[in-house]
Amino acid sequence: MATGGDMSSQAAAGGHVSQLLHDATWDRTMGQLLTPEQLVGVGFRGWMAGYEYSDISCWEQVWNQYATALGPKAAKATITELGSWVREVRQASCRPINTFPPGCAGFCRDECIAISVIAALQHDHCPALRACAFALIGSSDIDPMLDQAAEFASKLKETKQILSTSVICNVADFTSDGMSAELPN
Image (cartoon, rainbow, N blue to C red; front, top):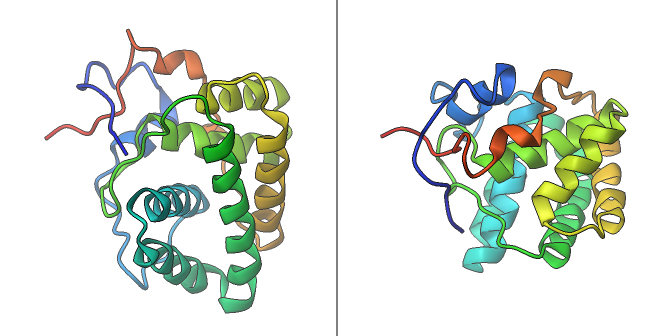
């Protein structure tokens, strides 16, 4: 897993997306309730890390966060869909998916785009959804990944974990010339 380049401009991302990128105030320790956006971002990061490091403890940390937020029964169904979505992202991607290491504050570019995909699905924002999906996996064959993402978004919605429309990002804000998602030191 890799991280983006250096910090060039926080203003480019705008609004809540910028806050997700740079929020160092929230704590992801066990027992701490997360917002729906944080739940998606931490879940995506942790599931990717489990694959990257071949370490089941990454998935256990995600399980603990979801069980705390949703209860064990709802967490089981939701985690199943999260895992299917992340597996499809990994399989469909034509480029490396970057995430910050577990435990980092804020979210990197790819994590923000992943959060945006789920929010766009929950709120039926089709043009933004398709643009974010393409930006995330770097392929025009986005439908299988979106099918899995829709299942995850639906499970989250069933558990009253509704993401804000303010996290649906404009992927043009994340160009190589524009904003980097790296946290400042």
